[in-house]
Amino acid sequence: MKPKHNNQNRRTFLRKSALAGALTLMGVGGWRPNQSRANQRSSNPLGLGARDFVPTVALSTWRFGLKANAEAWSVLSKGGKSLDAVEAGVRVVEADPQERSVGYGGRPDRDGHVTLDACIMDELGNAGSVAFLQHIMHPISVARAVMERTPHIMLCGSGALEFALREGFKKQNLLTAESEAEWRRWMKDARYTPVVNIENHDTIGMLVRDETGRLSGACTTSGMAWKLHGRVGDSPLIGAGLYVDGQVGAATATGHGEEVIRIAGSHLVVELMRQGRTAEEACREAVNRAQAMFVRRGRDLRDTQIGFLAMRADGQSGAFALRPGFSYARTLVGGQTELLDAPFLLN
Ligand code: GLY
Image (cartoon, rainbow, N blue to C red; front, side, top):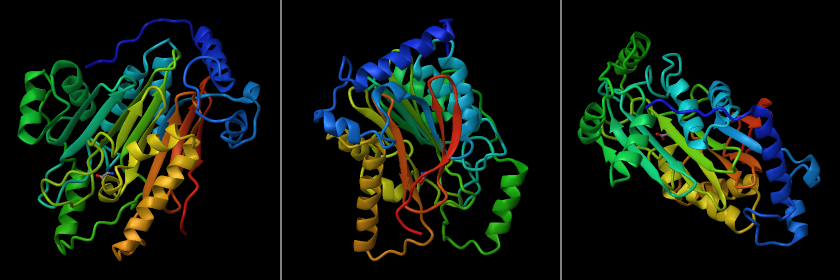
């Protein structure tokens, strides 16, 4: 499915978005945090006044988020919808064989199969998801087709593949020579000790806010390298890898999917923002909960990583990770994009 754009003037967008952000922070229209003005001030981590606040329009995980944000911005700056922008953004990473944790070129499972998980959600609670999908380069677009063309939210395995083929998606071999060679090297020992964060990237999770303030999110991955055949992580699970509530905000997760699922991570982050936390505070609290649960279960945290990104309905955004090394790309109204390091809990 090709995202559709319309041609709204970019300057109009910049003006409208900046104004909408300022008005929201001033408590005019849109989502109003159920808190005092003092708390609204403290919810701005830079201590900036409403006039200095520049809303975020795109937020995505890891360094590959830079190219996803650039694509999303090219949709948004023409007046496009957040749902089209978020789909277009993550498709860039899905199609890139150099990115070995998402889509085409992703590392296979222990049996040599590339299996993909993805989901998409808009500000109204429309959602679509595919899990354990093989042979399709753009699982995010299949997830969107599930959302828009079926009465369901989630399809998996051979059913998801059949649906994709019926919808006109092309069947392809997603296992590149590099990923196959790496898998064959791994097979010599075949030790099932998945290390998360091995290349400082993992899932792409992306959150986008358009000129009208609509939020959408997407999350797509090939999952843990060398996982058991049939394993599904957090990324296609609405509430774990992604959650969007247009009245409050959106969140997405990366890292060790099992730990994110255990705390229903992205839904938790959104609920914490609903209670008045800033985006970063909400992400930090979710990481604290995951860590506490990890410790209670007597597990070793050394080789694991989880990270969250969040964006409030007013465009205030933030991130937090369990361990160092989680970078993310942030694009503000106007298109200014930076790669940032998320604050973290443990060294
Ligand atoms: N966060 C991606 C996965 O665990 O599959």
